[in-house]
Amino acid sequence: SHIPKIHTVSIGVASGI
Image (cartoon, rainbow, N blue to C red):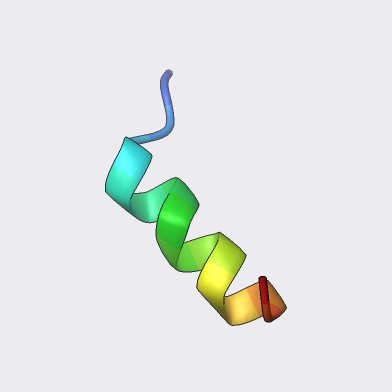
């Protein structure tokens, strides 16, 4: 399974990046 790029960005924003 792959992680969508948008989802990855969402995680980054949630991490405070």
